[in-house]
Length: 267
Image (cartoon, rainbow, N blue to C red; front, side):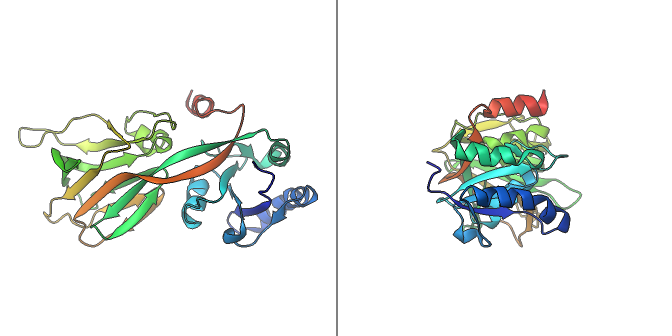
């Protein structure tokens, strides 16, 4: 599976300290028949260096490539659910690739359509939050049927792998990434006799469509987050979220399952 994948692209901040640290890794990779390429378009394995944030940036900045594999190397002071390898033990990555100690896993991605005009893909989550010191009001539709009217700080729509991030910090559920779905979690919802929400996260099947319609009451410049990037969109009217037919293919060590990583990170 990995025999014909020999072009490596490293995504990392161009800092001299990192450049120096990579030289032994680059040398080892070349000695074992790999080629280090300067452009991500020429790669068939893309390697981020850093924690989960760096991995998310690598996927986003290289366009959610469907024809290559992604993997992550964590720095010594960082940890991440997307990173199987450590910069302190870079030789393990080359050895694992050469000896087929890796498995390919496929992570679901959500597609977010803003104002029925612009599409954005997210591996972790999409969020919409108020930028003013007042609540944001949204009508929530599931498959074009009105579900609730939300009033609060905002909403998070998370993928299964994103369920351990922002979603978990707001008491959302952790979801197995083998389950193709997405989760909606509230941020400080206001519940009274006028506004009533479910009050808990809910999970939607891959076939569902979620629509969030922003009530234009002066709070129509919310911050929209796609993974770890924020966008300020003028006059946000609606967001439509579906599970994309695209996936992110990553490589993992055979003895390092998703739940092993969750246990190691949180327990």
